[in-house]
Amino acid sequence: MALSVFSSDALSSVAYATEEIALVLALAGTAALTTFTIPIAIAISILFAVVILSYRQTIPAYPNGGGAYIVAKDNLGTMPGLIAAGALLTDYILTVAVSTAAGVAAITSAFPELFPFRVEICLACVAFITIMNLRGVRESGAVFSVPTYFFLAVMAITLAYGCYRAVFLHQTASNPDYFTLPMQQPITVLLILRAFSSGCAALTGIEAISNGIPAFKPPEAINARKTLTVMAVMCIGMFLIVSYLAFHFHVLPNPQETVISQIARHIFGRNVMYYCLQAGTALVLIMAANTSFADFPRLSSILARANFMPRQMANLGDRLVFANGIILLGTISCVLLIAFNGITTRLIPLYAVGVFLSFTLSQSGMVIHWWRLRSKGWQRSIVFNGLGALTTAVVVVISAYTKFIHGAWIVIVLIPIIVYMFTRVFNHYKQVAASLRVETDKPDYSPLKNRVFLPISSVSKVSLFALRFCYSISKDVTGLYININQDEAERVQAQIDRLHLSIPFIVLDSPFRSVTKPLIEFIDRESKANPDEIFTLVLPEFMPRKKWHYLLHNQTAMVIFAALRGRENVVITSVRKRLPV
Image 1 (cartoon, helix red, strand yellow):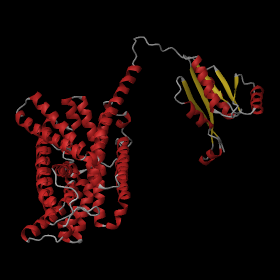
Image 2 (tube, helix red, strand yellow; image 1 turned 60 degrees about the vertical axis):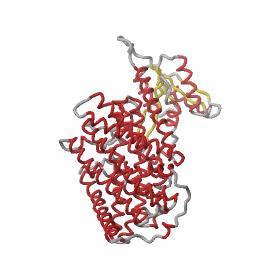
Image 3 (cartoon, rainbow, N blue to C red; image 1 turned 45 degrees about the vertical axis):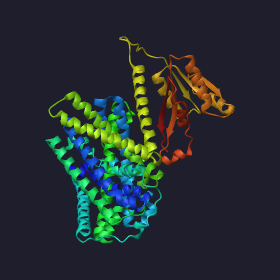
Image 4 (cartoon, rainbow, N blue to C red; image 1 turned 30 degrees about the horizontal axis):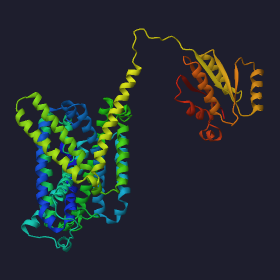
């Protein structure tokens, strides 16, 4: 169950990691593909194993969940923790965009006629996932197990049969384009490093198990480490075999068909097994996108409770989900998919920097943790975590350098901006708290003088009802009339005199027939002259019996409320009376 819940992101990266290596190497022609595809895949697999060994040390040290933000903040300090948080948030956003784009690519590979509509399909998938998460649909082992193990089963059959045909039957593909691939760039160290950093997308999602340790059955840490090891073996095995088959069958990257699709089509043709593999790949990728909808809002709520994000991010909705975080994640992911045209290859350069930066900070924090604690076996743990920190830091530098002009600069610029926003939000809450703090043991809570103003356009049952309310809260009540028409002003004054209403009545001239401007100027003038008083503006409103009747009347009260809100020492309230018609 744990493997299906926590590993869909890592397992699904097999669907596009090899393709990203091939896309870069193809720029240097056939020689680069044949020479470097397998060595780069092996190097990435070794890196994968190193990072897994590092996270195996994190699990027993943080049995309540060792996310990069928590580990970095506890051991390295607040600022490294915020950098890790910024990297994680960008990682979660990109996981949704990349996984959705890759899942839709699996669909359009099977049904090429859908390729022109890939962006629309991506947006529909993200919208569906967002709505389902807003409705409070929780992740469960039963829900995740079926598509995850379906994907693993069809992938295992495909890879096993592909290896059988390649190794024992000595079958290969007759692809003349493979051997006549033009060399657009020379084979350089920079090109090889760029291909390596692109393939490092295979490591995305491997931290999910260490983040979700409390979800395991006792003994939690032992079960989590077992699951992490099984996931690592499966991911490395699938990644290496896919890379080998792509090399052996001379698969070339194609913007309209994925490498996985080409391998399956060569092995099976377009039969039931081919479509099963494409369906399983699409499902597991969409599920990988869904995992971010649990992690992004959760991390946002942790940051909000620490005053580093708006406090609304910590609010639980009526479905007991962090709705604001879910909506924000869905919205930004859709913007990314539109901006990058729903193409996985264009999104991948943004991916590695944030992912490996969070890895580096997490593992560096664990080095400090073991050095401080020095518990049993700390020397072995510090070596593994130190090796993990060093290797992932090297990947961060490689990714930033080789992919800077290809889009990595966006993340390199964005993470400092996010961290700066964290600090600004924190300082704001700190200043607000200081401003609101009561600094005396004997505060002044004597009643304030409340002056009430009642705008009157005509004497009616509604205005008389509002006047009664005014006298219930203060004896200092003044009627206001906005003088747009002099004859109408005299008529209202006559009505007040005829009904013997003992209320002072002030006429505010409005030469330009504006209702709000003279009222605002009057309130501002009175408030400035009497800063220690409260001014209450009571707006009389009537409520028609049918909703569509509102369209037949001026919403003057709403306009006045919008114009005056935000004024200090000014209270605006509406008194409503329902009409029988």
